[in-house]
Image (cartoon, rainbow, N blue to C red; front, side, top):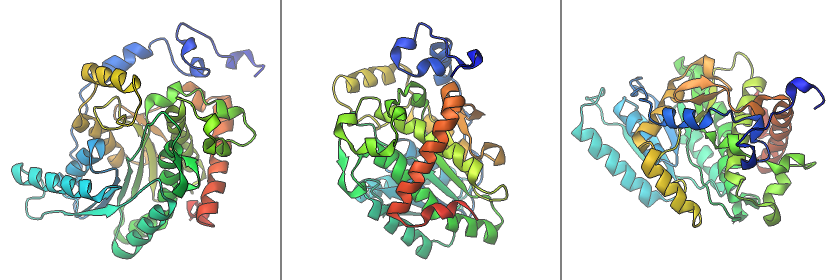
Length: 361
């Protein structure tokens, strides 16, 4: 970039990554700490009669979000879990908590169902969506909460051979979204509502070095062990921000479905359960000092689920619409956003031919 106005300025944190000087202001440490301690709004939007799908709903943010939806009157809550036994335990926990608290929906008990969904398996994703199309009368919210942060190369053989972080956090996440778009639009037409697809991202996207950005083709790199780095989780969250932003551009202006992404903050959850030592120790120590509880973190998900048209295609942080990193929305970021999106659509069309056409009404 020859234009001096777009040249990055290095500062004391620039050693952290190859790209963060595009994105991380000097005020970031202060902002991070103060926002972690901010009081977030308690969810009170009514979901009476609505059907909600939550991935990764057996623990952490997903479990607490499911609890909120049930408390707020949702008719049907689908707990989409890889391990259905853990899903059943979560279901029992939610129902038990509802019986112990006053709920806005006192006359009815929500139908909480546990459905198997393994995002490391494309066939599991497609079967889940086929079942949703057949068995659910409506879908009002798809909460794409499931995610992993492993830190080492684990090949997902049932997900096209992608490294598992990319398979789960990106490819399967958006395969699920695109496959459910027709049902969401049908729901909008029948019930006069604006369905939501909520993608849980992270401010970890600020730290993505994203060395793969210099490759002629990006997604093939995510199948190669030699291309694996500790940066992969950060990259997956940067990609999710870009794909949501590009969906906001490419979906029709009159499309009733709202798609947004959010940062839940630094939360005490099981996300880093597979992280190797000493990363797991460092994260655990940091969470003890600064981490939000899963319930507080889930409020960010609930705010995104209730957000209106003003959030479509955008990123939310601390329950507000905000810009992602300066790198993500800068000149190079805009170019990469289109490239990443186009490559992902090609990958999704290989899995389910023509699925990318679901973007357009």
